[in-house]
Image (cartoon, rainbow, N blue to C red; front, side, top):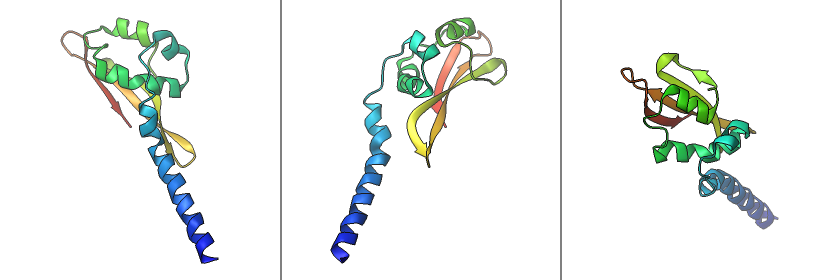
Length: 120
């Protein structure tokens, strides 16, 4: 009887650990940025493209209007210097997705993208 309980506990731990790893495994399934999919897709589809936008440098140097043409209207505007788009990277908080923000910061002088940050 104790053996069955121990086996069940180990199974639960392994499943929980695999669930914890899912976002890391999912990162291998990241997709290149696609403007039309970004505009029409789910937060999860955006999340799969967010790393490409963050690390590729595709947005660096673009104007605000060029960013909006590629990504559509932002979910959040932080004044004239930053906008944010909500994305789902696959992490969970309980039963709900733990969403992140792809924040795009514009330079004060030239109003062009200086920095792209992905944060929760």
